[in-house]
Image (cartoon, rainbow, N blue to C red):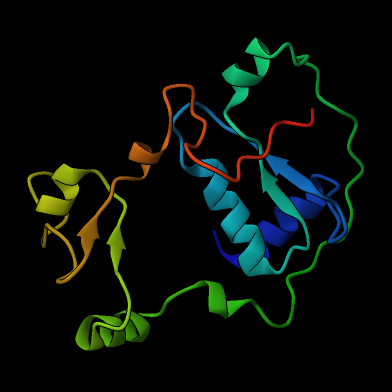
Length: 154
């Protein structure tokens, strides 16, 4: 999504640059962290991913509803300068591959990494990239393994 469109969407939802946004999605899903990254790229001040998922929140006894909150749209403008340091350009990737100065990690499924599947003309992965499917780091309930976990505050 283009940054200007994301800014417009945020404003339509009543989100200001000072609003803390807590994002969640389905079990084993990458969309919530991706949205937090997009907000970081836009320069949004505070965005978090809720540990686990919506089903996990229900198990914990968190209230759920099908009601929509009342929303008052606000102006949320795309900043003049995006946080480009949270992205890698094609040139950045080429430099890493050529110099070996960093690890290039392909987080897609193994069959996409190996080229066994995929709808692209050139299947496989970038030369030198390691394979680590993002879903391997999630427990069955959608939570992240390991230290540094933050429990839900909702």
